Image 1 (cartoon, rainbow, N blue to C red):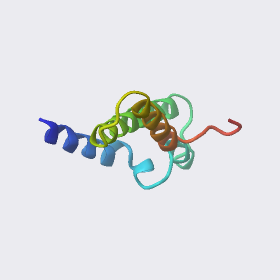
Image 2 (cartoon, rainbow, N blue to C red):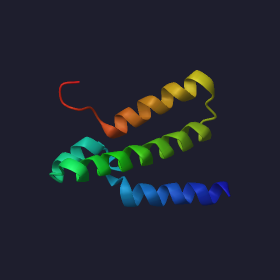
Image 3 (cartoon, helix red, strand yellow):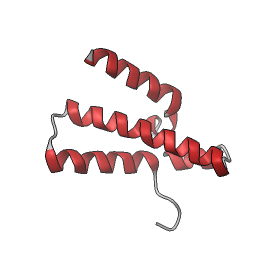
Image 4 (cartoon, rainbow, N blue to C red):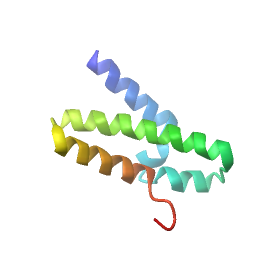
Length: 87
């Protein structure tokens, strides 16, 4: 079951999150695709959700717990999503 989950996450990463898989953030990809309005919001929401899933899986593989897991996951997701200009 765990193997299936990891494969599913990997496929999800390839399908929906290629932006940060290649080292580019979700925000940079949205800007590159010139997304605006609802399309941008939808893309960023899905990208962040996928990043959270992959980061949680990575934290589990690294056997992180408690504050270390929370800190790792927050930083991982923040790095994947990127920062909005001016923040």
